[in-house]
Image (cartoon, rainbow, N blue to C red; front, side, top):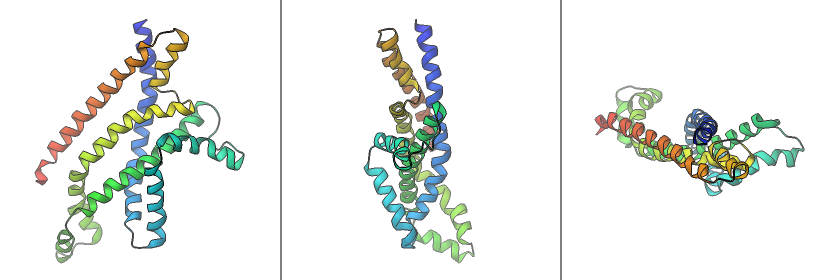
Length: 218
C-alpha cells in the first residue's frame, strides 16, 4: 500500500511541479513589465495597472481561480478554456500567472525604487544610455535586494498550487484525498506534507546559495 500511495502522490506532484514551473516561467517576466507600467508617469497606463494590482492583492487566490474559470462561461455563455483536464489546467495557470505577476511586480518596483538616484545620475555623467544604466548598473543590485522577498513568494507558490484542486486540477493534494474515498485511509493526505517540505527545503537551499553568490554587492 505504501508503494502504491507513493507512486500516486508522485504522479500528483508532477502536476504540482508543472503548475509551479509554468507559473514562474510566465509570471517573473510579466511581473517586471507590470512594475514598469505601475511606475509609468503616464496616468492612462499606471492607474489601470495599479488598480489591477490592488484588486489581485486584495482578493483571495481561491476566488480568482473560480472567477477566471467560471466567469467567461457565465458572461460569454462559452467555455473559452476548453474541456477536460487540459482546459482546467490552462485556467488555473492563467489565474496563478496573473496573481503572482502582480505580487512580483511590487517586489520589482520596491527593488528598483530602492536604488539611489545618484547612481542613475552617475551613469548619465559617464555618457551611458538609460538602458545601459539599467542593465549594467541597476539590475544586478535590484536582483540582490529582491532575492529574499522573491524567494518567500516562490515558496508560497509551492503551497498555493494546492488551491488548483478547487477547479478539479489534479495535483498532489487531490491524489492524497482520493484515498479517503477509495480506501478509507487518511494518512496519504498527511503524507503529501513530506513532498511539500522536501521541495520547499530544496528551494530554501537554492535561494540561500544565490544570496551567498550575490554577497559581493555589499
